[in-house]
Each structure stands twice: as C-alpha cells, then as structure tokens.
Image 1 (cartoon, rainbow, N blue to C red):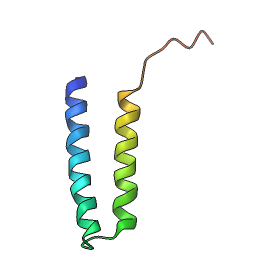
Image 2 (image 1 turned 180 degrees about the vertical axis):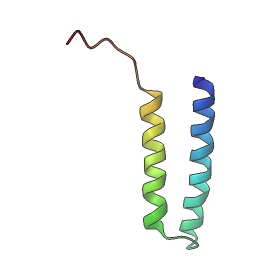
Image 3 (image 1 turned 180 degrees about the horizontal axis):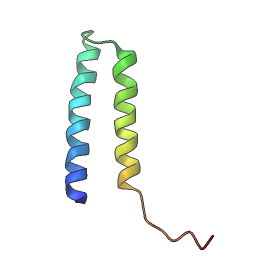
Length: 58
C-alpha cells in the first residue's frame, strides 16, 4: 500500500510541476500554481516522514 501512495504522490508532483511550468510561461497565473505545488510537496514529504510512534497512555 505504501508503494501506491508513493507512486500517486510522484504522479501528482509531476503533473503539478508541469502545471507550474505552464504558469512560468504565462499560460496560467502563478498565484494559483505556486500554492498547489507547495502543498503537494509538503504533503508528500510529511506523509513520507510520518512515523507511528507510541505517545504514551492518556
């Protein structure tokens, strides 16, 4: 299951990277593509570094 999440995240990053490239060519506005690309990178890195750790009894 982890491999599918990684492949999906890479596919989304690739598509948003192309979308941002089109924005750099003035086909789309940068203020739309930049936050989308940032959010995709942030979610990919945070999902990859997430660890299930024991936080103690409450």
